[in-house]
Image (cartoon, rainbow, N blue to C red):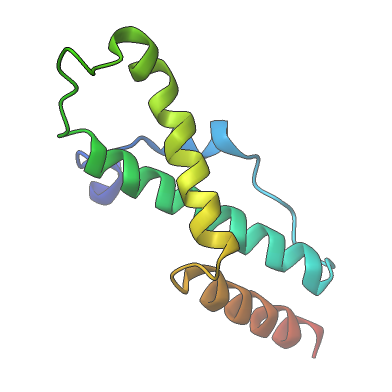
Length: 108
């Protein structure tokens, strides 16, 4: 097994598959490529935000208990989408440029 895949990580590879199915971008237009790149950036930021929030305890009297634990991931996803929709951190832009460049090379 690949040593990179066997190392401990804050999320499992199956998390990405559960989040979104991998889009087939061959022959896709720029809009589909942009959307896939933004979805990946959103996924990455969601994992990042969840890792940061994992160390935050929510104690009484303002802690939300089981309800807060259940909905914290939804809040992380919304924060990530908000970041991406307001310009992101550059991951989607870089992926978009790289995928378009690869598609241009394949077409030539």
